[in-house]
Every structure is written in structure tokens, then in C-alpha cells.
Length: 270
Image (tube, rainbow, N blue to C red; front, side, top):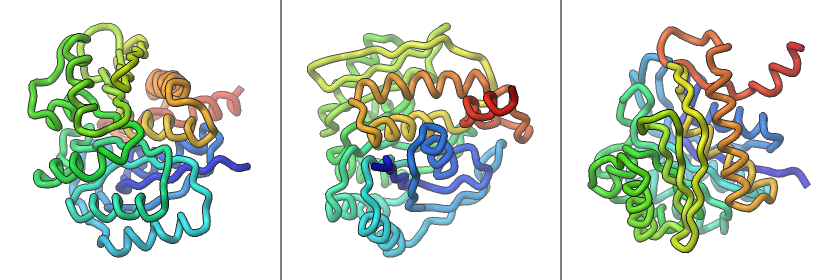
């Protein structure tokens, strides 16, 4: 059987994040990718200059078209900028019995531009977080969801991860990539077990799409039948290598993308 993953997210015209990053990641990891586009963004390596939200009824139509024909093994959810969009996606997931749902609570682009309306945060927490098998906030997103200061230590992260679980998510992967120090440490917990995933920090300006790429790589693992812990472990390796290889790309003059095809392009160039 062909592993199929669906991304429900916004389009990045610059190709580094959003739908484009998700589909590249699925392909790089051997998974067939389908998509439901929730918003169009005008953006490049310097920032977001415009957002055009897709009407809710057309989002529902896309979901119905995909789920009625494709055997979707995992769903990655990214940019949902408006409350109505969030409710529409939640209803579609329920209507089609979606499984292996990974929610990346995208709130701000790498450039610092906001991607989520202020009144949508509460809707996201109330409506979608309880449907997710995994949520993957970074430190700033977790702080916003909890109305708390940004976690600075591993103890802070463990405390916030537990509080995020209380919002209804089955599992939390709290990402430490925006933290300080020589290592990027991410915490996976379901309340009963905690597991840290640690990798050396690589200094580069080309980090556009890291969050999208990690969550879609986890979804790819789940689509292939891996356990949650194994999916996160493999995704952590993939994103670490994609960041490390990003400097081999010359894309734009701002914050460039990670190298989604670092394995394939390296092999083909040898």
C-alpha cells in the first residue's frame, strides 16, 4: 500500500514553508502527499506581504474531495489563520474520521510576521487541540497558548508541556529550537512518559520552514506505520540534516529555506 499524508495549511509563494515545505518533505521521505490549501500568502525570504484566506466552503470541498478518494494515513495541520477556518477543518476531520493528526500551531512566520489572527488562538485551543494526536509548538507558540513567559530551561519546558496536555492534546512535542545553548532539545510527552530528542545547534540564517518541515516529517513517519516516538526520532534526524545542509542552497537574500532534498540531491551530485 502507498503511504499517503495530507497537509492542511497555507501556501508559501517563496516555497520554503507551508504547503510547499510539507509536500517536499513527504516526497523526500517516500510518502505521497495531498493538500488542502487554507490560505494564500505572498511571501519570500524577507517576509510576508499579503495573506488571502481561502473561503471556508472551499476548504471543506477540498477536504471532501481528498478524503472521499484517497486513503489518508496521516494529517498534518499548519496555518489556519481565522476562527471559521479552524472550525471548518475540525468538522472535516470529524466527518471523515481522520487519524494520526499532527497539529503545528503556526502563529508567526520565521520573519516575525503574524500568521494567526488574535481571536483564532482560543478557537484553535478549544476546537482543534483536543482532536490532535500530537501538537508541535515551539517555545514562543507554547508561551502564547498558555499566556506564560517563554520557557528558558528544560524544567520550564517540562512544566509547560504538561500544561499543554491539559488543553486536551494526546501528546505534545515542545520544540526547543528557539532556545539558547549549543543544543536543540525537544520534549515529547503524553503525560505518563517523557522523551528528549537532542541535536547539536547549527548556526545558519537559512531556517525558513523548520517547523513545517519537522511536523510534516513526523506525519510522514506515522503514514508509514511508525510509532509516534520513532516518527519523531526520524523527523528530528531529517530536520537536523536539512538545516545543516541549508547553506548549500542559494535561495533569496533573506532567511532561506532548509534543504528538503539534501539526501536526494547529494546522491545525484556524486
